[in-house]
Image (cartoon, rainbow over all chains, first blue to last red):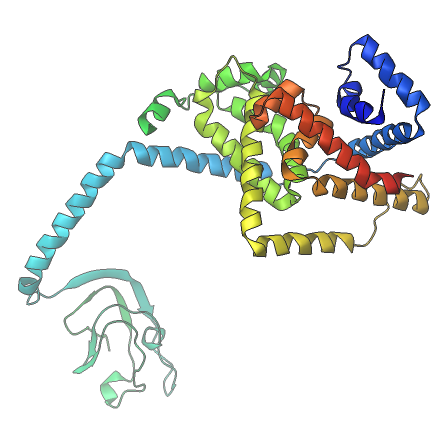
Length: 187
Length: 217
């Protein structure tokens, strides 16, 4: 047997797939050929080292992450199941939106009332220049009108405190509703 | 298609058994029985399959693509795909072959995408460089530091040798040498003929021997 034939049959030899006759030929060649014997030894040692390599372990959060992903898969299926209902709801919302658009010009004359989170502001100590928290900069979606001065939607970025007029030196507001009408400030 | 998938998806009707006892029972079952249990509505059966395969798949994908973190993502993706399509699994086939086929395809796609994305390639090189320069940690005090260093160094070189194999050869090599799959299983997983499996394995082994030869003598 030549070295080329040995190499050609080596995989079958290694995996025990050769018939007894061929196997004996390969073993005979291995005993006679230093080069192929070296090849076999290197392969043996290399594969042993390979099997010695410690197994990579999954991170601790592998299973929780997987459970979360599978949960999302289930949710996705549920959405798919309800896709027809979802589309119908979307059409409904669009219809209501269109109606609201037509109704809006008539609604402008009606005082608008909206529910906000309850707001409680303590009056500042007498003589303090600090603003009550309601009047500090921040998101505040409404129209607040104080005795003819209007502070419009979005952010209340400017507010004069203490107010020029003596009537505002102490203010307390407790409200869960604010109207677009002038706000009622308890003095 | 979604309807078809849903119709066979098991409902969440888990009997209120003691969870430990339930898991212990599931551990006794083989893969085919676990798949049947899951399709019969026992969701814990899927988690048992995941427990059984996640480390094996992680090692297989990691040895194939050479990036541990990404390998973990791909193992997750493998399970998600199995979860979605388990009702289509042919029970006359081996579950392990099927799940390895999915994992192998994901690993191949990953390698293909990387070859098109130089940034990912750079990150992989950087990661390997960092691994090469990490401080040594002695894992076993019964060996001398020299022995441990040599053994660790050799292991790393052998790992590198696997990473240097051409992609097609590497997948076959890892499946055979590290996962202990038969030729028939490798043929099914990789979708190539038995002859091709043998020829690729032979070439992979030759190349492996050529790379590791100089350092093992």
